[in-house]
Image (cartoon, rainbow, N blue to C red; front, side, top):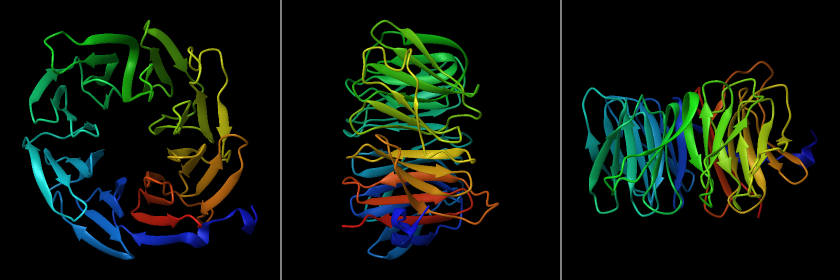
Amino acid sequence: MDDTASLTDRVSPIAAGAHVTAAAFLGPVGVLALGDGTVVRVEDQSEDRIPLHPDGAILVAAMVGKRLITGGDDGRIVALNADGTHEEIFREDGKWIDALAAREDGALAWSCGKQVFARDAQGRLKNFNAPSTVRGLAFAPKGYRLAIAHYNGASLWFPDTNAPPELLDWKGAHLDATFAPDGRFLVTSMQENALHGWRLSDKRDMRMSGYPAKTRSLSWSHDGRWLATSGAEACIVWPFKDKDGPMGKQPRECGVRRVKVSRVACHPKALAVAIGYEDGWILLCRMTDGAEILIRRTEAGTHDPITAFAWNRDGRRLLFGTGAGEAGLLEMPG
C-alpha cells in the first residue's frame, strides 16, 4: 500500500492504558470507556480521566441523546455528560450489567442475567424475565419496542403494554441484536459463527453463514441498505435494500487481509466503512468499489484487536481503541 493511500499521519495517539470497551462522541468531546472503570475525555488535544466505575469494569456502553450510558460489573449504570458531570441512574449490587440499548429520546434498556429492564423517556421502569441470559438488546427505530437476544431466538417486547413478548425462534445462542434502520429486519449474531435474521412482516428466517469466527460487530450503512460485519478475514457486507434482504444474494467483501476483522463502523454520511483487525490495523474502505485507505499500521506479529470505533456526527473524526489500551483519533483532511 503506497503513501497516497494512507492517513496514518493524521492520527493522534491516545494512551488509554486499559481495554477500550467503547468509544463515543459527546458533541466535540471524544470519550473512551475503559475496562478499568474509567473514561477518558479528549477535547482540543487535551485529555482527562474520570473514575466512572471506581470499583469495577465498564462492560457495555450506549449513547442516549447527548449522554453516554455505561454499565459495569459493579451493577451500576452511570450517565456521563460532555462536561464530565455524571450521575448514577441504576444500581443492583452483586449483578453485572450485561447489555445496554438506548434511544435518542432518552429511553434506556439493560439486562442483568435473565432480567431485562426498560426505562422510558419519562423515567417509568418496567421489567421482564427472558427465557435465558440476555446478551443483546436493541430498540426498534419506531415505537417503544425492544428486541432481546437469548438462547433459541429473540423476543420482541412492548414495555408499555401488558401483551406477552413475541418470540422469534431459531435454535442456538443469540448474542447481539440490531434492527435495520427502516425496521423491516431484525438481525442477531450467534455463538455458531453465523448471523440470523427475520423479516418482521412475515417472520421469514434469514441465515447468513460462512464466518470462520464469531461476528460481534455489526454496523448499518448510513442509507440502511447494507450491513457491515466482523468475524472473517474481510469485512462482510450484506445487502438489505430489497424486500427479501440478503436472501439468495452474495455479500460483498471489503478490506481482505490474512487477519480477522474485529470491529467495523460505517461512515455516517458516505458508503465507506472503517475496518479494525485483530492485529490493530485499521483500513477505511469504500463499499462501492473496495478502494482502501490505511489509517493505522502495526508491526508484524502484533495481536491487539481493535475493540471500539466511533465516528463523530459529520464523519470528519474517527475515535478508536484496542484491547491492550492503545487508542487514537483520526482527523480527516479538510
